[in-house]
Each structure stands twice: as structure tokens, then as C-alpha cells.
Image (cartoon, rainbow, N blue to C red):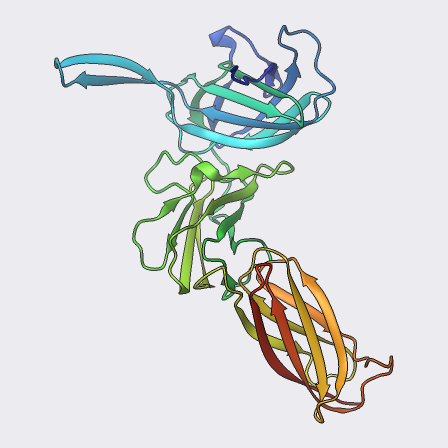
Amino acid sequence: MRLAFPELIVSIDAINDQSVTDSISAMPLLKALSTVKINGSILPPSGGAIDTTFQGKALLTMTDSDINARIVDPADDVTHQILEFGGTLNRSSYRVVNGKFEASFVMPKDLSFTNEQGRLFGYAFSDKKTAKGSSRAFKVGGIVSGTGSDRKGPVIDIFMDDRSFRAGNLVRKSPLLLVDLEDETGINTTGSSIGHKIEIWFDDNPTPIDLTSSFETSLDDSRKGTAQKQIFDLTSGGHTARARAWDVLNNYSEILTNFRVAATDKTIITDNLLCYPNPTSNSTTISFQHNQSLPFTVEIHIFATDGSLVRSINKTIEGLHTAAIEWDGINIDGARAAQGNYIYSVDVRAANGDVEKVYGTIQITR
């Protein structure tokens, strides 16, 4: 068996519009809070012309200058010197179009100020090809003064399972956590200073979950992105989630949301049955929350108060959290339903055959 190593090369061609160079004295100095621009391309294994057929995504990771660490071997009490990579300064994603990409981001405050070389790693992939490369053609140090008076932290949104989530929703027993972040200068992904991480706390647990390494920037704007993680071992019932994140200027924000966890995903559970508008003179929408991740079917039967069937509606639900089915106010004969009170049943059938039935009332006014 042969390991599948990337076959193409990620070439870092220019940093801040300056062609890369092996001359350390001529390398650009990337300062804290400065905007960095990187141009790169995808090359064949032997170098040469740009692979203009490459259409995909480039992941860039910039690290601080290397650290000279001293480690004592407890076996013989000998001190060894080792070279460690510096902390992560930026991790972001960009589109590769016709074999070229351009990156732009703001350097964080959290850097070492050594004026030594850092490292830049690139990995790119398309549907059929992969590429990798690196560069040390820059130095890290200093800080840009007069960067403004931004005191606002990132905008944070918490979702469970998908972005249709709303606070208080019923979610699966092991939901997918999504934390969307956006800031006018950029999200701090260094995690190098105490507390400067993307973190989330559940309920009263004092120990947060670190989401920093899972954060991935938007391909269209590196100042925003998403951290995500599957959450296990949540008990059934109500829960809270509190997220915190920092921008590159070290301003932070927090946000709190709440949700409910179903006791099991094997049995379909419906909640918060609602008909709106109600009363109605025309159409109305019947909605409810649910705990299913697979598509399921819904049958709605609307009855007059004498028990006669007015209308039946069938629909397959594919979305998470909430199901919504519209009744246009038309009866089985194609005419508008008469003014009065109606009873409706909602028959929900899960993919595994489990069934639940709930009831409600509708009032029609003319």
C-alpha cells in the first residue's frame, strides 16, 4: 500500500506584493495588527508553469518564529535543546481559481516580537488533486500603531444541528454544534494567550470545550467563519450553551442560548404544535418541532365539528428542528372552507416506522 501524498506544489509567490526571497535581510517584517497579503499558485511536481486546471480551496496556516526550548531528560539529567514551531498566528481558507489564490488577513496582537522568521504552510485540494507547500520568506515582529479604537468583539451565533435552529428548539441527542463568528478585523485563532480561544460552556460546567482548532474561515471573507463539533453525552431536557471568542485586537464577546435534548432519537418526538395565523380568513400554516434527522412523513387531516373530513394534506419533511405545512383554506371539493371551527390531526411517521399523533384547532373567519 502506498500513502496518498499531495502530488502538486503550493507555491508562495509574494508576501505584501514582494516576491519571496531567500535573503533574510530583504524579507518583509509582518507586524502585529498589520494587514498581510499573500499570493500563491499551484505548480506541477517538477515546478514550471502554473496548473491552470486547478480549481479548489487553499488552507493556509501561519506560525510565529521558532522557539528554542530546553528539555531535561529525567533519565540522565541531561539538558537537550530542541526547536519547536511557534504558535499559530493565522489559519484561513481561500478559493483557488485557475491555479492561483490570494489571501488577506490581519496579524494578531498575540505574537512573539522576535523579528525572526516565521513559517507559512499551505495545503490545497480540488475534486481530483491535492497540493502542499511552505515558506519562511518573512519575519515576525513589531506592532502597527494607530490602528483605531475598535473595542467590539466578534459577532457570535450559536446553532445546533443546522442554521434553522432557534433558541429553545428541540434537538437530537448528539447534536452538531455550529458557532458562526464574524469581526471587522478578524477572529483570533492563535489560542496562544491565556483565554484567547474559541470556547463554549454547557450548563454550569466550569470547563469549556476548545473549538479553536475546528474554526474554518469563509472562502469569500477570512474575517468570518465557523467552528463546529459533534456534542455527545448530553442528558435529556433543557440545556444552556455559552460561547466566547476574541478578535485579533483581543476584544471578546459572549453569547448565550438554550435548547432541549430529546430523550432518544429512535422515537419521534413532536412539540410546540402551532397554527398561524389563527383565526384566519384565508390560508394558515401548521408547524411543530421535532427531533428527527432523517426524512419523515406527515399527514394532516382537517375535520369539521361534525366529524366530516374537510381536507387531507401529505408532506415529506426533510429539514431539522421544525416542520411546517400550509393549508390554503380549500376543502376536498376545491371550494373555500366555510366560516367556523375545525379540528386537525397531525400524523407523524418516522423513517423507522414510529408514529405520533397530535391535535389542534383552527378557526376560519369570513
